[in-house]
Length: 169
Image (cartoon, rainbow, N blue to C red; front, top):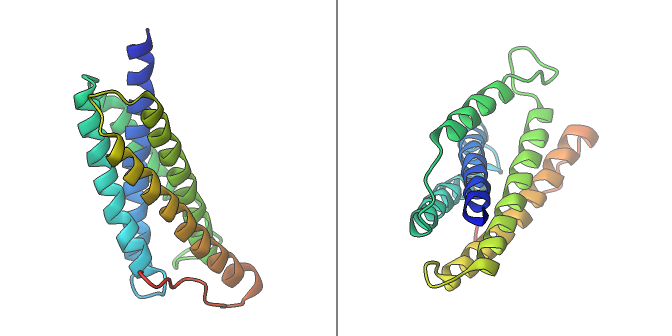
């Protein structure tokens, strides 16, 4: 029963990684000429690496990938991209805010998943790598929150106080 529940849990996280990865890539492309672009491009790449790490851990734990969950997740992300944003032909500042919030939530969930695996870690999982992944997810959360605050300020106040850049971004 425990292995079955862990399998469901990790496959749900894999589906979230698929959705987060697609959203991050789409957002990084849309913002490539904006101040947001470099940070989002880095995060999109990290999400791909995170998904790869998750697959390796699932393999180490002998947990099969349930492809139907990732297929449904991809379809859901495509449908979510069609949401009304207050504009017909151009990208709305509201889209940026909502998408950054979604990415931040995805990173929060990912961090929780890594912490769960760390608590369960045995010889099949690399505890040091899990610590690195937890730290990276924490950095992503902080960076996405900075971007979200900036986007909300621009969208709702018309202010453009730059909180986007970080020394290592």
